[in-house]
Length: 139
Image 1 (cartoon, one colour):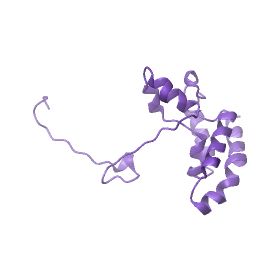
Image 2: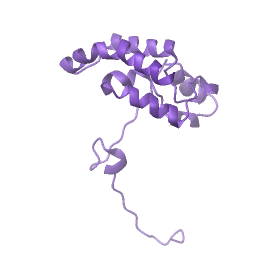
Image 3: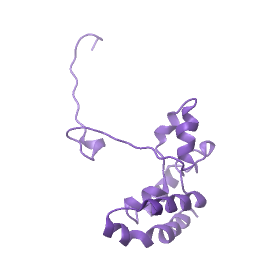
């Protein structure tokens, strides 16, 4: 049922805009909102987050199936379906409403930025670091 739902969503809500996005190299803001709103209505938005914070509560297999189906379309379109970063689960106190719950509802989006001279857009594999023993902490 999950695969059928996502596959249908991709065909109806994303694929019709592939040519436009490829031609213009952008997703119009109103189209991004339309996709987000339809993903919320369909129950796909924040499917990666637990139910108790407003997410869909999918397990790893469900998420893999969701991502496989979304992968049939461009990243620029599918990113608007919304899979907020699970790092938001670390929010505490007033951060939960301000960031986590609002992101799960699609009211805000989090961003990730990284500056490493050697990594470019390949953060996981491109980061280089080094360490030197100083003797101050027993190392």
